[in-house]
Structure formats: C-alpha cells, structure tokens
Length: 451
Image (cartoon, rainbow, N blue to C red; front, side, top):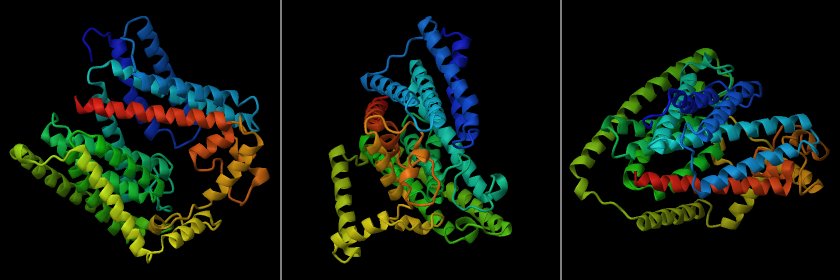
C-alpha cells in the first residue's frame, strides 16, 4: 500500500477479500436474502471508496479505455434492466435482478479501487488464488465427509459451498488458471510456486466432480488462451500438465466409487469412499508438489538451455492439436462427420432428459431440456423484440409457450435469457460488456507479463 494513506482508506481497500469471502461462502448460492447484507456492504464500500477518491484522500483510479468501457456498459446494462420494471410481466423479479445488477456494479467498483495500489494486479490475483483455492478445498472436503453440507449424503454432484454445480465449475476453472499463474511467476518463492500445480490438481478434481460440461469447456478455452498470452508459456503448460493429468487420474478412479459418483447412497458408503478420496487427494497432491519442486530445480539449473517456443510456434502446435482432434473424431465415427453431426443435433434437441448426475454425461450431447427452454425464450423474444418481457421474468413469460412440465426460472443460457427478458438492447449491452471485459483482461495479462 502506498505510504501516507490513512488507515481508514487502508481498511476500505482491504474489504474486497472479505466481500469475496462472503460472496463465496455465505451467499447460499443464488438466494436473495444474503444478497441484501453482502451486496449492501459492497455498495457501501464502493461508495465510500469513491468518496475518499473524490475528496481526495485516495488516488482516483484511472482505468484504461477497455476498463472504462466495461464500467460504462455494465452500468448501462443494469440501468436497462431496471427500466424493464416498467413493462415487466413479473415486476418483483425484475426488481430483484436490478438489485443484483447494482451489487455487481458495487463489486466492480471495489475491484477498481484496488488499482491504485502498487502491483495491484498481482495482489488481486494472489488473493483470488487463496479464496478460490479455499472454495475448491472446502467443496472437496464435503465429498470426503458428506454431512458437511446439507443434502451432501444424497446428491453426488459437487456444488457446495456455492449451491450450484455450474457456478462451482467456473470457480474451479478460474482456480486452475490462477494456479498455473502462481507456478509460472519467477519472482515468487520456489515453495510458493510448487503450490501452483497443486491448486491446478485439486481444482481439476473439483471441476470434474461437478459433472459440468459447460464448466469444463469454458475452463479449456480460457486456459488455452492464457497459454498463448502468457510470457512463461512453458512453465504454465508444465503446471497444467502436472495438475490436470493427476486430477483426471484421481477423478477417473473416483467415478468408479458409488459413494462418490452415485446419488442416494447409504451414509456409510458415502463416508468410506469419501475417506478414500481424501487419502488419494493428500497423497497425489504431495506427489504433484514434489514433482513441481524437481521441475523448478531443473529450471533453475538449466535456465540457459531450456527451449522456449515462440507464440507462433505455440499457435502452430495448438492448430496441429485441433487438426488431430478433428481427425480422431472422423476415425471414431467411421469417416461420416455429417452423420455424426446429425446424430449430435438430434440428441441435443431431443426433449428426453438424460441422467444429469453421472459421469457418463461428459460423453453425451443432450441439452437436458435446454433446447426447449431456448425455443421458449425465442417465442418470448418475438413478442417484444426491442425490450423483452422484463429482467428475470422468464419463468412467467414462458408459460404461454411452455414445452415441458419442468419448472425453471431461467433458460440456462445467459445470452438467450437476456434476449428474451431485455430484448435486443439488453443482449447488445451484455455482449458489449463481455467484450470490453475480455479486452481489459487481455490487456491486464499483457501488463503482468512485463511485471
């Protein structure tokens, strides 16, 4: 922290970690009631920080163009969601979504205030590594001792402490990225760098035990982009290889244990298999850490002789891997890609709901009724293409077009949901906000390369 800052400012800027901890561990998933306390604290912190910056007690944050565009577009998206209360078919839900949007803006502003600190990006990445790593460890602890979480004895899919498996999968994917970042930082103590692949390992296990195909796909894309952007690509790739291979090996074994991978198992089966998983996690984590230490020692003693491929070579390797994957798909499907594609489309659009609580879903293309909900969303959108049915109003707006008896409050696709609920304007704001956020993130990674 810069010298001369008052203690009150220091305390205010220390709040992001506490706010993130509360959001990750105390929010009860998407429950609305905890949002009042946690979100209110975030808004107070954001308002107080901006007031101190304008006083001026703190230095005023100065985001780059992409960062500024992100904040303006996010604010515009929240305002548009709030305006939709006027025409919403479910105004109460639209109010809730507007309030959530305000909380997201509050968290974003608190994060922006961190930028005035020296080496702010490294400090934020380090704090997030600790927090996301803690979430992953606590989630796996609930698999080892099943009665740590409500309903942990009955449902196999990993979802706590966030309450939703897809959300936990995204956190685990980000933890994998952060772990690879820790492992590749040359300025960090070697003992800390050895923890990077260990974080990747436990995050991989947690990600796969959520059975979230979307989470796994997003993690793969983000990690591929990070490998191509990172300065120390070889170290990043080594950390990912160590952690992911070990994580996949442990998870493949875990999928064969009924007490870990199957629903509605007796408590003694859950506990016995869970304790075995705990032992496996500890032993394999120790092996991954030891292997990482050996690799770091080798790196230190052979730094001048290490081959460091250029970005063009890495891109060529990624392209070659994609070609190999396509050829493998063609071989597996008997050289009939068109037939495979037709079968995939039929499976994806089929109204039949597959088993969402087994590892077999990783090899399936079934959308588990998502296609029906997306068609319903399109029908809702066509009623009012410009403005939509109102933020958060999908559960009511879908009723005239309902295609199955499953009760849902959202169509399980954020762009589709915004299109139906906030129209073309809302979708355009969402996509623009996402694009600006990606641009700002890439710029941040490039700045970290020179740090």
